Length: 166
Image 1: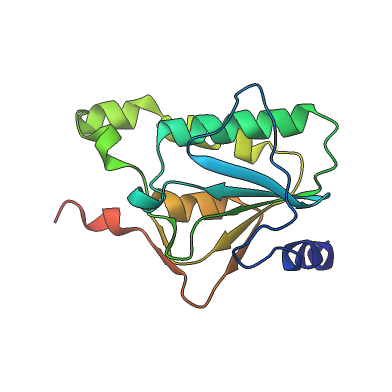
Image 2 (image 1 turned 90 degrees about the vertical axis):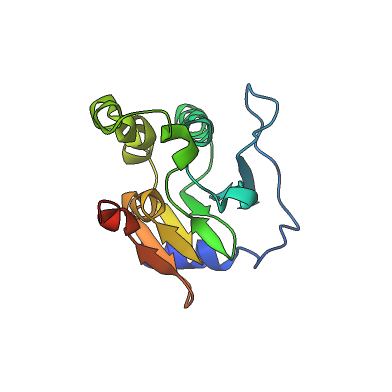
């Protein structure tokens, strides 16, 4: 299985997606993710919030959940899904602008991570996190939710929020 995933991931071009086809869903286009198929059996989901270093937001996870539901319910030939970000940042954690007006109790009681992870944890094929750059906080957790992590030499994993109360 690992060999098959390595072969699938090795077919991914470095940054240019020359022979890709865009995934069509009920939504005409996604704002926060890009989906393509670099080969018939491989789905490539790229987080696409470069100005926010791919900070994780509810709209981003709504799009991810919609895409994963569509792939799960279709007869898609996808046998492996790769989630990646940019070279600078896989995902720089949760988008704190979403939480700015909420109290700690509201964030804690809302169980927002369940919404973020429910489709990923029940996805029918292996998910590979291809990490380059920062994977901090929620970005690190997103990578850990995946079945396999492939990290570049410049990948930096961390949970900086543990120092937030200092």
